[in-house]
Length: 311
View 1 (spheres, rainbow, N blue to C red):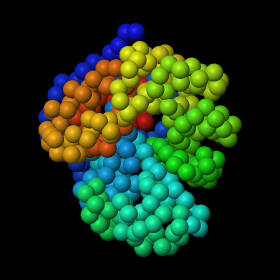
View 2 (spheres, rainbow, N blue to C red):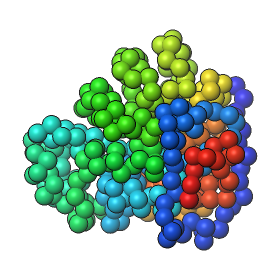
View 3 (cartoon, rainbow, N blue to C red):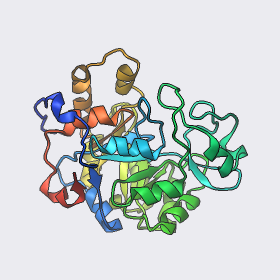
């Protein structure tokens, strides 16, 4: 198949990538229909990354509101987050089922009450303790309104519980749920057709399987993989269905920066741009503050999407 082409942008000086002092880069779709429209493919590039776990950094823990704000001071970003249940059945944000890597605590999240978990301090990217405390999903959903789009990775939480939370907060315009299987997708669609999903479409077999569900493509964004799709025409086929493609760089390109193999993002830029050239619209990254400004700082918001983006 033909490669999807994206006009490559000229190099933008690093000065443009400095943190903004006058507020956040915000995304506001306003309505569930607006969110579907934002991700409808119309041929224009989107100046948007997805911050994996919110985009942790030195002094800024993953899955933490302070970190979300830090990310949005640098670029437009969706935020991928990880809800889990506490012992007293409250949804908190923590990627791992256990506490050791991300907090000052030990043991399983589900063996502790919210009150116990709120006593713990969160660790940053380097494992250093910070003054930050664990965030609840309720806090994240309230904070995000009018600012960004949350992508909820369901972990071991039943998908209907996440839908109930989104409905409770009237967050259908700015929260979506990751659906990993056809069964999940059908269940989600039956629960609430206004809530968008991120679905896994790493090959044509998965594309065809989703197509057969009858769920509108407008209701989803398609995740095509943590490595560049082997099928060079995959993004083009997804675009032809009318929606956007997302791919992850957290397991490969990002690692070379985070592990200190290079501190020069210019060295990595061609690899990120190669994803865009394949037709990837949104890159899910552990380093959104570097990747967002690198790829999109010189790129105007397309007129068709301009009313959703503010800075």
